[in-house]
Length: 333
Image (cartoon, rainbow, N blue to C red):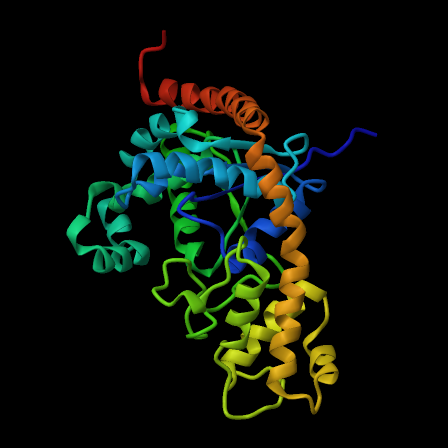
């Protein structure tokens, strides 16, 4: 019997500093777990990063660091395609065509554009407005079936689907219309200081987030300072967002259910619980940190992985871009 073709899954992450624990639990850790079930394509989205002004040397270094961290988190280049977005020019080539098939009103409704414009009022550039189209190109140029998305990316995926369907309707079947892939657990880790908000490395309060490369004593300190409430009972509840967030982290690290966690810490209070959360995070991140340091020191290996990844991704992307250019009437060489 013919083996069923694996579905293709694509995701990317910006190289704008070390990943947070939220990035890891909600995205990167799941990526490694998908490799045997899906054909996985993972990119370091450095073109998206420059919608905010970056220091060039720092961006190059952070791109290498992001690659090393992805590999350290379990992405195997023998199983998955790993590459840097800017090293595959067909992404921007397709983005222009898709921009001409995207409505101004669609982009103006993007909530992330509104949020970032308010946050960076001194640099509301055209790239910030049109980067959802580049994101659509990233996805459509590989014929991705599935895209892992968090709650804040659903709108962008829906725009990608609309663009693909519109193009297919005008020019005939061309693009795969992607579906969202939603992790079952730990999809949204919140700030340790403001648990109503998503954990973010751009938070001004460094105690609000845990970075994957934080030292054990730093992780312990941040967990101890995490906001809880006046009650001392470890129990998940909409009225206890801080405790619920810590339980989500602990559950993601240990595999224990909320009921099991509540029984484990019955009568023990928040002090013991916060230490246990910190210890579970340290135990998970320590081997990742060791592997990251080893990979970053082996620059030749890292560059070879990215070179091979870009070459393979480029071959796939060029085929899609050429097909699209032919359909819209561009002369072919």
